[in-house]
Amino acid sequence: MKCQRARSDGNPCGNYAVRGTNLCRKHGGMSKQVRRKAIVRAELSAWGLTDEHVDPGETLLRLVAQSARRAALYSDLLRRAYEDDPSFPDAFAGANVAALIGHKYALTKEGDRVAVEEAVRGLVELEAAERDRCARFCKLAIDAGLEERRVRLAEEQGAVIVSVIEAVLAGLGLSVEQRSRVPVVVPAALRALDGVVA
Image (cartoon, rainbow, N blue to C red; front, side, top):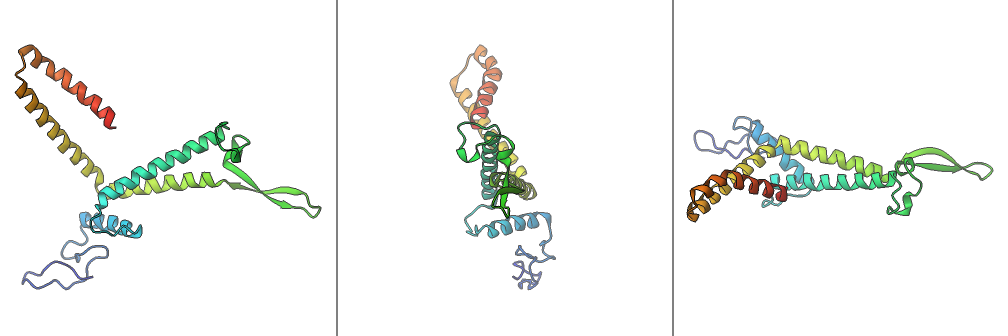
């Protein structure tokens, strides 16, 4: 792919773009910001999410949340199997370590069945793989600057809430006593709202 920028004379640049970007080295293809976006685009492309209307940051945050939920689910299933929870499927009957490790068996020459090897159970592998996947998604999100974006969005939402509250309070014509209670009542209500949203 060729660089999308133009030279100083107005003609197309003509240099090859840095892989995963649409800019050459001279026009910023190696800058941190461009490289971060390229990482996210490459990862989304690997997942088959190449629709131009897909917001890479939003998609990555959703994948982080989804992966974290799955890791928590698998972890809970393992805990229940390890504790020999009676509500857990019978396939894991036989408590504790049997929930984590099974045996591979072979027959002797006499036809007796003997354990020859221990094997990690599939659920253990699923849980470990999902934890690794979640950590990878989190690193990608950090590399892409999504934490900064989330903070910026939260700050913008906070500013909107403050302006709405100020407008409502100004329109109510509160007494002096009522106005003196605003610094106590409003923060308490916002903390309660934060608990509901979280």
